[in-house]
Amino acid sequence: MFNKSHKIKVSKEFLGQRIDNFLMNYLKGIPRSKIYSIIRKGEVRVNGSRKKPLYKISEGDEIRIPPLNIDEKKELFIPENFIKLLKERIVYENQNYLIINKPSGVASHGGSGIKLGLIESVRNFGKLYRDCKLIHRLDKDTSGCQIIAKKQSFLRKCNEEIRLGRSYKEYIAIVNGRWPKTKTKVISSILKTKNKSGEHKVILSSSGKESITNFEVLSLSRNYSKLRCELVTGRTHQIRVHVSQEGYPIVGDSKYGCRAIKNEQKKIKKFYLHSHALKIPDLGVSFNVEEPEDFDILLKNDENF
Image (cartoon, rainbow, N blue to C red; front, side):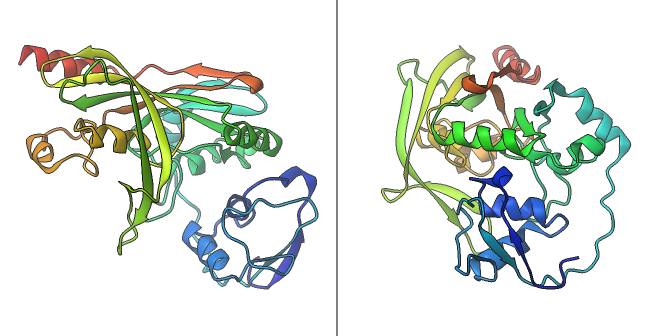
């Protein structure tokens, strides 16, 4: 289907969508890495010009798609019991979107060596779900509230609300150590980096973007703290970086936990960060998903140790 160069004209329906997200939906079956590669190399042209992945398309834009010689892929096999599990975790659904309580260990989308993600699985729920799209992403090991658009028009509205700062995201985390109750806000400049192997990591940097998280202590045990974390900004790995910079990394965080704590917690395989609440008031979106029971079990066992 994509072995020849061709042009497409953007309709009003896709106004304001990022070109990388547009192409991922249009070029279904093409790896994300390949899509980003053709954008960055300038093989994708919009009205004859190169564009960055973050470029937002306009009605009437003419997009040139280069030839894509991708071997025909076998249909992705998704176990029926996994589809059943995800369907049972739907918190709410209407004609525009659905909310899923994403399990820890499931990536929001495939790519970077991950063949199967949440969105690919949801698209296999049935005919009505074929064009579903992620509105936001959660880290693979983060559980909780994930909103998925069923209609392009709703995706566009959500993206605009998020861009204007009219959305609310709240997480529950268990961190190492006893977080001071007086520490209610962390502000820092953070920068997303990439190492030679392609792994992303966020660091503190004066050249980064300002990031703000509000914190509230919900409970304390001898060695751990259960926190409510409210995102004021929404940077990659923001909560993980903020608690780590304060010296209280998330329990089970192998990327941002300090070495001494990593050595102490080799037996703890779970990552204790959960997307608890998601609200987009102007669109009537407001949902809470309680954290897994093992969050409180960890604290209780720590008290009884």
